[in-house]
Length: 69
Image (cartoon, rainbow, N blue to C red):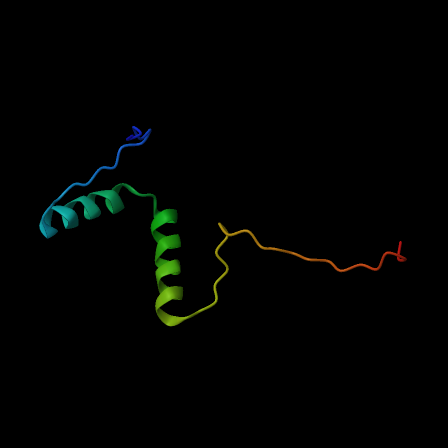
């Protein structure tokens, strides 16, 4: 009993040169804000800086006493 997937898995084999060309094309069409944001993210990964990434959700917990108003 095999179920048909709603989203089909796609695998595309390309050479390294083709992948580099596609990558260069993608980044050449990206806005300068996107390129700069990703450069900052890669820099923080490489050098261990704790930069705030705005796309993440921060969990905030406030402890209260039941008697406090």
